Image (cartoon, rainbow, N blue to C red; front, side, top):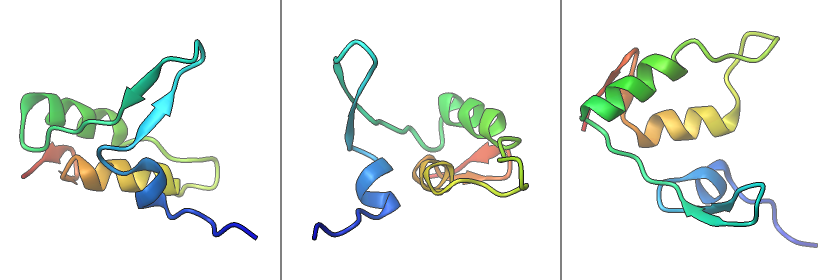
Length: 73
């Protein structure tokens, strides 16, 4: 039986994913930049119905260096 991938292996910085049209994209984060600040502020309020953050969101915010609404290197 195949091992389950961790959130870091699946959603971590540098991993790839395919969009709906089949094109491959690479996940790239830019911590400590204006772009990073915008991402952190935008994702700060994202929570599921039970009030928790998904594993994917937690990993992406970690890769972006988010602390609250600000991004740090």
